[in-house]
Length: 134
Image 1 (cartoon, helix red, strand yellow):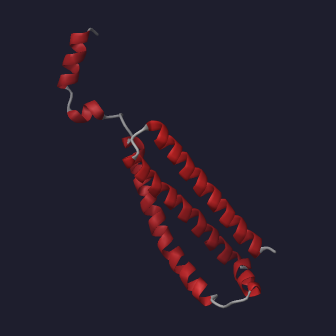
Image 2 (image 1 turned 90 degrees about the horizontal axis):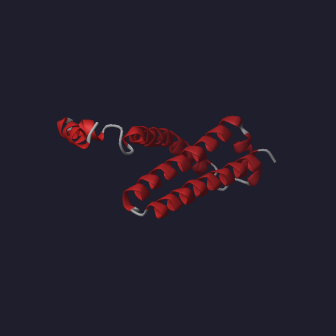
Image 3 (image 1 turned 180 degrees about the vertical axis):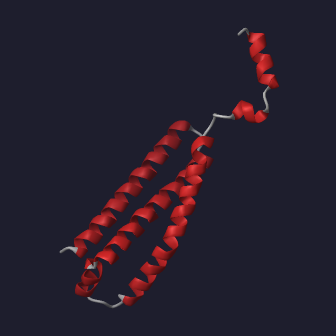
């Protein structure tokens, strides 16, 4: 195809046809849905957490340990931790992608955010499991 044919073909395409397959539109919908799903899942988990912590106010370590040793409570706490840090990472990723223009700074910021969220989630999960099973 010569250069003139390429130009004519580009002019005859609709704006949607010219941008289809370009950019981050392929993964943007999934990212948006995951933020909504984690938000919805965090609502009952956060309510459970607040009610649980209010009921444990003033409790001894042994009572708190017994609370976390019950498998349902341990699983709910681990789910809360995992979803919270996933939601935080997804939200901060959107902020960085929207406002950090330089590619290297954006990549570095995203790596720090993802790594930091993973590290904090692992530390929290370890703490829950350590209290529950000691």
